[in-house]
Length: 569
Image 1 (cartoon, one colour):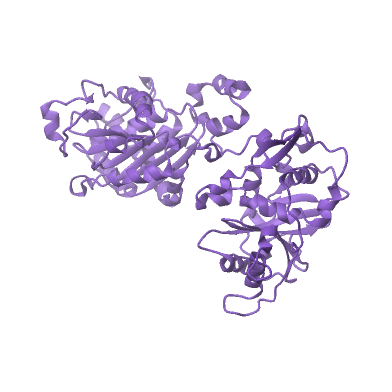
Image 2 (tube, rainbow, N blue to C red):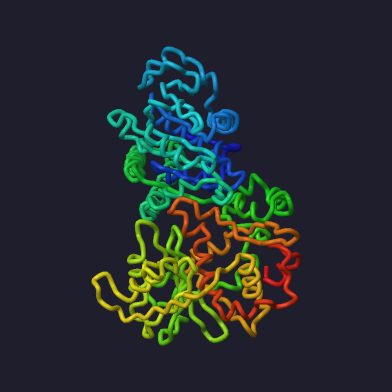
């Protein structure tokens, strides 16, 4: 049994078993150890020194002579930051440069003969004693991996790697199935990074591996690995007391063979905070980061491992907060499958819809509930889906709604080509009122925004301040959003950034909409599309007039000192 270590070692006087210390994420990933491993970890988790080093060393031992590849966003980062950390991890495991491997030079002839591939240039390589070779490549120099064929890929600091460039690097992962196909590491990837902020130009392409995880299989692997660990401890004890270990060894071999089969082809994705390594980092380190070394936004992202939103002082909807959300809109907090699951929906009354006709069709459904206004459900459709598909979603969900009347609010652009009867508003109305088979659905759609003027963004900013701070309860309702069934709407509102421009001496606040140029799959959660649908729904004529010209309202900028006191944080 080969052992790795990342900390001090001593003998346990109680059970005479050698103990090696590491953080829990190291233990978990060692036990589960699937073909594909993705670790999104906080600062100080030793992702390169512990996880990348261990996985790469295991590949070296498990597939002697095999070609592997380490990939970085830039070669400079790979050479100066990633590989030194990995080599430190190898040394902790007993692998020393100049003894067990050499870098960027021709290895001894006996090592070369054990290599399964022909290598002419060793400039960007790491060669091991058993013939295994690691090619060092980068996304800014794709020629470094051109023509290569490897059996395992290692990506570190992956949030800096653009999706399209990663996709171009993946084809090198093909290898020799006859020689190495029996290893559970064959054609796998090991990806480590900390939490990305897509709105800051970072990348989250590796989240696609989440859908490949089989939770039940992972649980069985963990259970089997725990049992195997216990058997190995018993073997050590038995060996030291000269007990016959034949049966125990057979059982261990049976578990090892079974685990290899269970791990092969599987994916494990884990998001871990820095607190999993708190014994090494110390609470003082984390406290120092929280007390000023990092802004709260960055602390939550890079230490706690939370998906980032916007800093409050850069948000367009700065007054939106937790008090506007509710999570008890459905039983057990699960997403509603139909309108029957919505606890607060008044099924005997008409409903409202706010629509944004953009590169994503976005529909939010709301309803007045006394002094409250509730957003119950949102729908979206991405190309090639269009009005028919969006309407079908709506019709299926609200099949059992009793009062089939929908008041539709939308952008004035939805009225373009109204005279030709080709406007977007009419098309959506027809798709809801008449199904795909040409039958009437019983729904009546009222196009409320036929004569609506443009809504300026500075007017929207002022209106939303009034609405969300609750300063105008007599004229505006109290906003409540179903946090389970309107996830995309909430995300869009919270991630909509504010910008400032000047018209003479006048400061004008506007919504920055660069996020609408993201790739389609990211639009629902990250773009401002849903926030625009929300705007059209809420900024109806009567409510706009209720605050228009209201005196005493500050128009000073997207961040108002003391506003947090009004918004409940």
